[in-house]
Length: 325
Image 1 (spheres, rainbow, N blue to C red):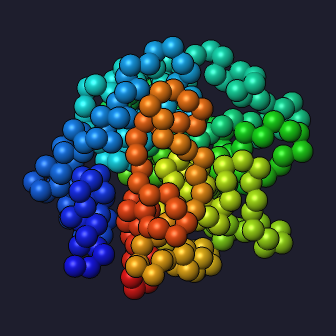
Image 2 (cartoon, helix red, strand yellow):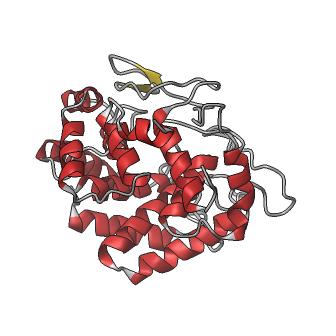
């Protein structure tokens, strides 16, 4: 049995669904894949993540068990679309993101001498848009307003940044990738040309840095938070080699020559058995609300052992790039 075959037959339906969709090329609308996605809804991972429905008192953004991250995680595993149980979580996220204080300091800062560089954690909007689209629970009115917000808050260089320091004049890769992904999904769903233009500018910001290296001197980008960009992160991914390449694959830019160095780096991480490992994480499995806790088991997290989720993504990226796997 090949590695692809074993992933497609994985006991975890979330892994099998992901592999059959991305590696075997099965249609999401096929009866077999529809059944498999329904199985994800009753899987152990989904049941664990849905424990978030029981918590009402903590901030929706609480890392990583608040409603915002729960919806992200459910979208990540391919939870069935249109499940009405998720609507209360969506409502809590929307109430939070449209509260009057959300666009005021310290959450959002406009410096008087830099009106075109609003300091805003745009990854929040990006994740909210992407999660709702993937999960089929789009709050049309409010998601459109999130799209408007991202378009309006894009910096002159094409990205976004939440750095409140006046000296920050360049966008952040961590705050750019997730808005880019959310807006790209929105464009595919709606044909919104504003979103398309915004996506092109954001993608160019990342590609100008060959995804992982500083534009001015070619040195590896070293973010102050979110983990090393040259390591594979999972399950929460702000910015790393695999997630950046995955988004480039989703928007059809993986064959751009400026992705080559990042692809070389990713390809070099393949283990002897053909799988790919989780190299960095800031997540721990927890049965209760804990800082950076997650209810679900996301598989092996060991530098020398492959993780099935990241293996599917890595193989998909390399195949889309025309590299034999």
